[in-house]
Image (tube, rainbow, N blue to C red; front, side, top):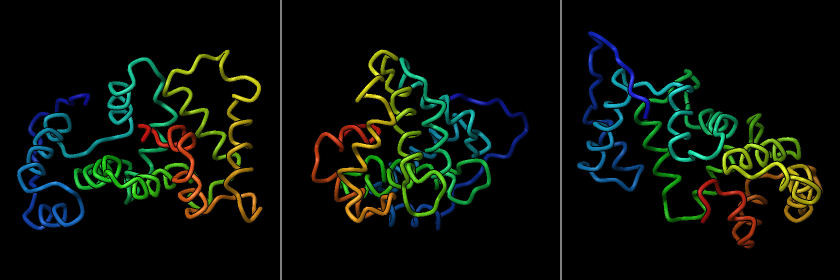
Length: 194
């Protein structure tokens, strides 16, 4: 992560109740949680990961791409309490969900990331924005984003395949079931692939 310098800032404490909560809600044991916490504090001594620092994390994960758009979508989901920063607990819960071997759980979180306006549906505009952000993130060259590979065309094709009720919006079940049954969509729409 970026590593902020903050003088005289009190080091936030990881309470026993937080440890138990994280043990119950992630796949990590006590030692792993403490290690994650120490690493988090090394990079965020005040215990707060803001949007700018979060984008730096994504830049390290995707050094050839432009993570700004996609990391912004992800940040909004990770910041569960909407206080403009990600706490350690929010961070570890999200990391756990994204790294979980259960594709359905990962797709549920991915659905939340793609539901930019938080109305429990993904519309064609949201899907187009996310595909554009994924193209930027994965450094897809501009000349490969034309015609049927344009973000708008890809979004339209996805909707034709997944919008089973014709509502012009994908609910979580349509999105998850459609992706689980289509390896191409799974690899396209899950940020880290499957």
